[in-house]
Length: 281
Figure 1 (cartoon, rainbow, N blue to C red):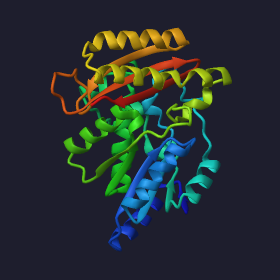
Figure 2: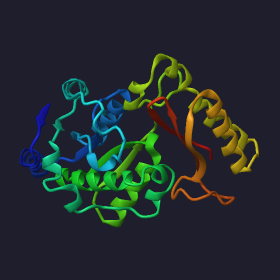
Figure 3: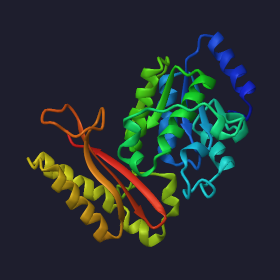
Figure 4: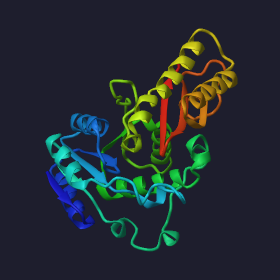
């Protein structure tokens, strides 16, 4: 596995692969990798003969008073895991390579509408930062396909919308959420949880699963289902940001015969903000 830190090195290697007629798959990450990330790499390796992962803790997707400074940075260990997973190239740039001028002076990408809902309502700068850095990575790597986890479903469909709107020739693939044995969705931020909080954390999945079962049993009073789920989370020790039932493709409220509906949640447990979602239909 190659590890490169500079854009020129990245482009030279990708250009050589492209000249040889090889497809390239990209897995963007912020590092501090877990098995969920490695599943993305495994999927990428099945989609293209050449695979690139990026590790970049992106400052533009963190708002004021969020955990940018404290976000775990474990590049050496991440590199060992990626090499063992069979990755071809790791791109780990410095912030000045991605944002060579002050952030306020840099061109930014926004996806209106989708970015203001759910997590966007509580993290107003987040998805603009995500869209901007992913657009830059797509331009730098020129991948044929890019792989993202479905745990952050909102991020996945924002990236799909951005890719379609900007006519970027990249296929976007979602990979199902990877969970711990107790059903907790794997996340780098799970490392913030204490032993006591780790015992409580699976309640998030259980709460969503209970709402799914009620919906499938015929209960369509989604506001009542959402409020009951939030109350259950609060009783368990969470501080819910939201629990909402939405259409999967555009995050609008369901209207009867929608092809796919999902339930989404974000809740604080200690200093960790946990997110999860489940398909209902």
